[in-house]
Every structure is written in C-alpha cells, then in structure tokens.
Length: 224
Image (cartoon, rainbow, N blue to C red):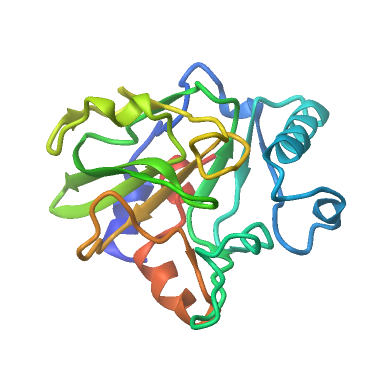
C-alpha cells in the first residue's frame, strides 16, 4: 500500500454529494458489459438510462447508486471520444460514479484549491468539470468532479479554496453532462501531468495498469 493509500485509510467521514444522505441509502450498481439487463435498454438514450437508474434505486429503497471503478463497460460505444479507427477502444472506467438526480449538491472531498475547470462538451464527455488540488501530510494529489451543472463553473477561479465538505457545485442534467443520466464522476489522480480542467476517466486495456496505479479506487477515500 502506497503512502497516499495509507493516508486515505486514516481519513474519515468523506462525502462528495449531499451530506444529508446517509450511506445506508446508497446501493451498488453494476453497469459492466456483463449485466444482461443493460442490453434491454438503449444506452445512448439518456431518458431511458435515467429510468433504468431510478428503477434500480426504487427497487433497493435507495437514494444513491454507486460503483464503476475498474469496470468494463459498453456505455461508451456510441461516442467517438472512446472509439476511433486509429486508437484502441477505451471502455474501462477508472473513477467512481454516484447516480442521483440533477441539482444535487456536490461537496469538496477534502480541503483543497481549484486546480482547473472546464466545460468538456460533446457526447460521452464530462460536461462541466472541476479538479481540486490537495496537499495533506506532504502528499499532493487531485480530485476530479465531472458531469456538473454549467452554473457550477460560471464564476469559478483557479486557486479558489474549498474546505472539506463545503458545497462547491451541483449535478448537471443530460443536456450538459455529456448525454448521461445525472451522476457524479469522482476520481482521484496522483500525477495530473499537463491536464487542467480535464483528465481521462476511461482507459483501454493496455493502459489499465498505469491508470489503476495513478488513479486509486475512490472508495479508499469515501469508504461507502
């Protein structure tokens, strides 16, 4: 276990969405290509996908569906961002998704400052995105919050500080979030290189070892 993972093991009560929702109201969801139920819906139709998520929540008497780290998915097949003739298909998710309704408050996981933000437009993309920089116990790392509302980045500035648990944004709907059912893509990044308001959230099989090392499982931090 690396020093950063050791740090995460000592941190407690980390939330990135509405703190009034207890973890007892979270339920796991399988969006991998092995889930036969997904073959029954049109994954490119955000409304159909949203109904699928809502039905899963109702069935499990939950308010948040979570999961997706290191998950092989078919969700990205209709987007040229992940499939083109020159590069290997990117279909392995390397963040955690938290599925809940649009407008839900998004919280800073830890004390940090805005490293970058952008409106990553286009089908399958993040839409409005914020990346925070954290420095704790001589460890520097980043957290990415994707699929936000446009209002979340309108008056933001690089270097703006946020405290752990502080409201920093709201979830966007399918019209701005890349065409998905509303959810937060939450990701931890060790070495962000030259990225600012964006960072890959999906990788190919040949890149997987690198991204699993550089982007640890967010649940090490959230402990859902």
